[in-house]
Image (cartoon, rainbow, N blue to C red; front, side, top):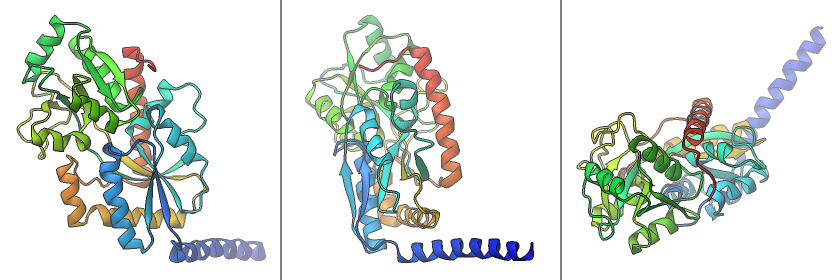
Amino acid sequence: MNQLLKAFLGFIAWLAFGGLAIAQEWPTKPITFLNPFPAGGGTDAFARPLAAQLTKQLGKQVIIDNRGGAGGTVGASVAAKAAPDGYNWFVGASHHTIAPSMYTNLDYDIEKSFIPVAMIANPPQVLVVNPKNISARDLKSFIELVKKNPGKFNYASAGSGTVHHLTGEQFKIQTGTFITHIPYRGAGPAMGDLLAGQVDLEFDGLGTSAQQIKSGKLIALAVASAKRSPTIPNVPTFIEAGLPGFEASTWYGLFAPKGTPKAIVDKMIAEVEKAINTPELKAIWLANGSDTPNISGDNFAKLIRSDITRWAGVVKKSGAKLD
């Protein structure tokens, strides 16, 4: 028994020191962050500055690979099958906690196919309108306008099954209104058409909309956070404007394919925490409407589970479907 115990302890020690050695050597080549949305959207607004900062910290280039389509599920499928070697990472979003309730044939599982690493950013959703298409300048007037004109107006989203889409559906439930949903392949393309006046409004992550609001190209009617955003302090929350409990955010997080060595995952958690707390990234995050989150590992996994349950309820109640 003593020999068996010694052998077992020796094996555990080998695993520990072996993992430490792997983490100390990593990285030895460029790293890829797969972004499951087109360039120019909210994911890019945070993933690219983070990649640039991590490149400095790690001494190896961090490359962004955009693979948009189907509300982020196409890219997630690709990332789930990537080699778990510490050089492939997935920039997921809160949209991926909605997908299990919207898509019946996913070939990956956001909880089982990935290791939750860390939340990167957490900007709230905001209702923005094109001032040339929508005359209302506050939420109360907007609700009155759409109630008088059911089906006349449409809202863009980053795709069916995204937080943008379900926030719109939740709004329709709470206000008893009908606005037509127009899904896009990502927040970037949706924003382009909103600015061009091809669509009337959007429930959007503040990371994509902040600069357009500040420039006056879009009008923000309400922000879906518990308190006002310091990025747009003059814009009331939905709660202040009369919709109790109306909160929604578009968080972005880093995931590793299942099987990635724990030592490397732990090192990446530390590097991400270091990066998002640099003055440079804190300033970018604030400009894009996000605070600096402090959620990683098991705590991040718990948040994902909670969001899956929450959005499943909204999907069921709204009858939301893929367009």
